[in-house]
Image (cartoon, rainbow, N blue to C red; front, side):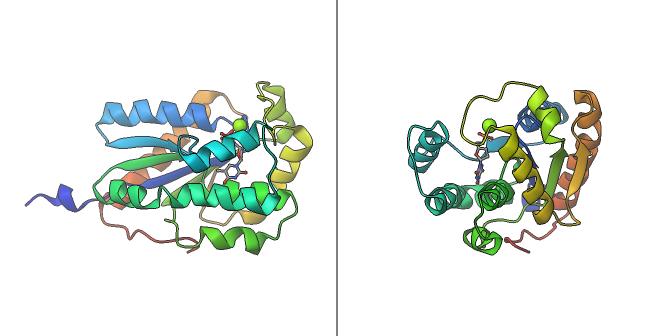
Length: 212
Ligand code: 2DT
Ligand code: MG
């Protein structure tokens, strides 16, 4: 009797402002999980490798202009086109560490003034994360880290608005880590949260859809 074949992977999402450390933490998490023999993949949104992703990438690079609603729906479509693969991976036991997800979609678009309920609607029916970790950093501190790449949205005044909209969106199930701490001090609690979640999912926690 192989209980392992029934166990599923965990859908773990990292959110936060630009330069909050999501990308560094997610790649460090991958090495850690690999070392433990946990089957895991690192995903990120936007996924710039698809046709939709290339339209998004061009928009972010200021090489094209799109209406705010249009780009919002493209970001959402970019998640929808990965939904079935995501479900297959999870159901066959692979944990996904995802760098940005629907919460970035809603926080960034509502920070531009779009209605929050309108922003959430196209995300309905995507897979709900088993864990959302918010890497919390004051926008000013993130900006000090430098390396804003000059993409659209990478400006302090706009990041302040995004931070506010993340707060509006945030629910009690989110785990918050102080991301202005040194990298190891962010990594340690993150590891505990992730392992705990992987364990719970392995035991058969139900996979749900957004927004539940
Ligand atoms: P990266 O710098 O992480 O590549 O993100 N964004 C992202 C949205 O506006 N909506 C979304 O749905 C997602 C996933 C956040 C590029 C920028 O795209 C923004 C930053
Ligand atoms: Mg960026």
